[in-house]
Image 1 (cartoon, rainbow, N blue to C red):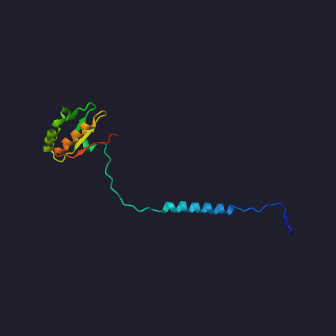
Image 2: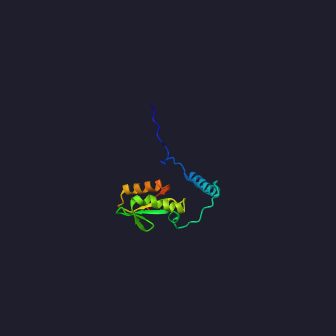
Image 3: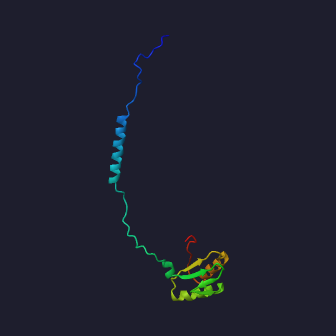
Length: 133
């Protein structure tokens, strides 16, 4: 069997990639230009003005539970058993006020539950801020 020998001058065949790179750059420019003209569909929204005040503090009944489990309402210390009567008295003035319960580090969960239950029994909706804030 006869074997063929390469009788060329030693050059190997190469593929010229220059035209392919030109096409890639032209496509890239095309997509960048087209993407800048595309307007995405959406609706206009009137956002409220940003206010730094916390509206829940101004319009709610604030109950604070200190780290030593003392309950404070209206800047005075109250007993856990009198929370319901105090909330009922404040709700008589403005029935739409929610009760906001803020706790300090070290306050027991049992005291928080007693205060929240007393406020709910008085007829108020109970909220509390995130502990991360």
